[in-house]
Length: 180
Image 1 (cartoon, rainbow, N blue to C red):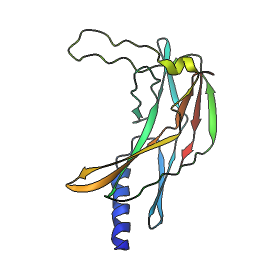
Image 2 (cartoon, rainbow, N blue to C red):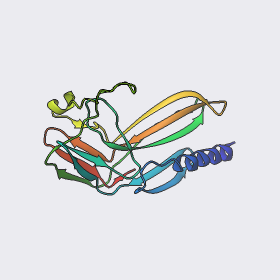
Image 3 (cartoon, helix red, strand yellow):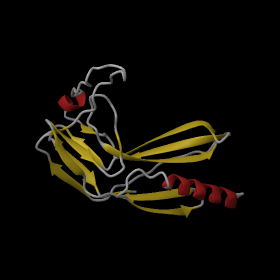
Image 4 (cartoon, helix red, strand yellow):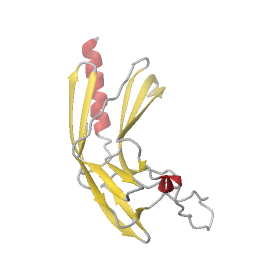
């Protein structure tokens, strides 16, 4: 039974790795114990481009946060499926932290508009810009949900890694080279 669980965890890991979101990520993974999955992502420095009054932060093939009025920031997500009833916990650590002073603010996500509307999306800075917060708040966030996957009851674990964070008070980008 333990071998079957270990094989299933490893195959889920390999499937999840094929869905990796950032091209410039060096992924090191190992199954360090029978019930532990460890993943390490390495990241290159952020790509920052000027676009009008704002800056755009990007990474190859990364997904971007889409919270109205909040800075658009790249992130990586890893998804795992476990048998229903599995208890999960996520621990993380980060590598070297660097800072980059910015000459403009990072672009906020625009307000939502209807597809059949001729209106242009309105770009409006949300409260996070005036409160002087760091966004995203954490380097790693996770969510566990229960549902059906391929006709089986499973626990789906989604782990969101944010290698680049924006300090709105100091107008600087804080970034790491590794998230474990």
